[in-house]
Amino acid sequence: MKITTIILAAGKGTRMHSALPKVLHKIANKSLLRHVYDMCSQLENHDIKIVYGHGAELVRESLTDLQAAWIEQKQQLGTGHAVQQVSDQIADDDVVLILYGDVPLLKLSTVKALLANVNPQSMGLLTVELDNPTGYGRIVRNSVGQVVKIVEEKDASVSEKHIHEVNTGIMAMYGGKLKKWLERLTNNNSQSEYYLTDVIEMAVMEGVDIVTGQPETAEEVLGVNNRIQLSQLERAYQQEQANFIMARGVTLKDPLRFDLRGSIASLGQDIEIDINVILEGKVSIGNNVIIGSNTVIKNSIIGDHVEILANCVIEDVVIGRGSRIGPYARLRPETVLGEDVHIGNFVEIKKSSIAKGSKVNHLSYIGDAVVGSNVNIGAGTITCNYDGANKFGTIIEDGAFIGSDTQLVAPVVVGKNATIGAGSTVTKDAPGNQLTLSRVKQVSIAGWQRPVKREK
Ligand code: UD1
Ligand code: CA
Picture (cartoon, rainbow, N blue to C red):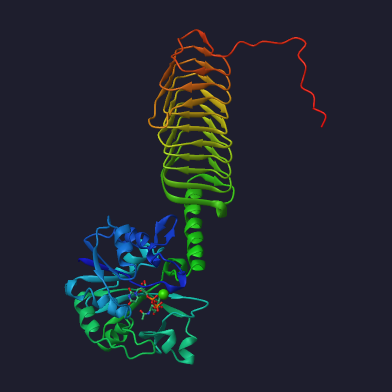
């Protein structure tokens, strides 16, 4: 059986009050439409059609990598009208699945269960019981519980408004049937729109069974219409991810203050994550790792027994086993730290490798450098890697000791076991095993008097 999924994404999203089309707003740093796409693209033997309209250019430009056919709905005349735009691309024996671009948390398992209800005599409809059904289409059933029709809030009678079972909009049926029903839609209703929901009554008239299914949780089928709902779904999504990683052996000091905006490539055991930690992109974390509060880690690999203290920002970095980072450290892209490296407070490392056992503990900038093992870089050391036009590298070989407040003017090499005296400006290579210093000789002037304030 071939499945054609139609994702409806043409709506304006007026209540977002945004220049950005609604489906491009994000949950966990991924657009609503991409959430829907990523979920349904896991279906086999499957084609995806996206009906877009409002903010057309922006939507297509931001999602050029999607393997989908884009169908423009120039005027938004209703959900039925939106699906009609795809009619001529649907084969009679396709199973058509209707999804919404602004319902981002729907699960694959729910969709599969819905599809299992589709056969030539029946179609699947996803419904949900809501405490407050206001605004949704209501599911009207007969005395023996069979679905008879869907009535929109604005067209509902007083008694129909009391129904708590609502239409999620998500449904699946054979293409041949759907196409026939779409042709017969009219806009004789309070909104003068072509309602997709009217196909339900047509199906019933034809003797097609409406098999309803429910999602595991209501969040799965909630749509985003405003920024309050966007934030609610963001939290629901984050809570679910927090539960997932806790189930795999991570201690979260507070799951409500943890955010994963991407994916975890691999996860060890006995990881402890303090509050307000954000993981972005693809992150791998080894065993026995501690991550302090207010830390952001993006696209990085953290080895076993690493301790990251509070308030660090780490991006595109590899951190070797047993290293200790922070507090207040910034590790920038293309930084590779070996085992047992210590990076302390107010230290910035960019595009540098630092080998086993080396320490940069205080107030330093290390950029475009290759640092060997067991090197000690004193407080306030700066690699001057940029002359205003080009970047240059610094090499610091094994066992070197860089005194505090040193400037290493690149390109420059500090040899093995070299010592640099504090306060030096190193402009030429410093040989191994020697003391290099560029300090002005210290003098003391005996009998020197401090200036005194002049009388006015
Ligand atoms: C629709 C359903 C309602 C259901 C609710 C669930 C109809 C007539 N009503 O109502 O029963 O309870 O969803 O959220 O189907 N869209 C287009 N083109 C259009 C109109 C809409 O692509 O011309 C898209 C929107 O971008 C959105 C989806 O279809 O993703 C739903 O549209 P919306 O206007 O929000 O429908 P509701 O009135 O909420
Ligand atoms: Ca809606």
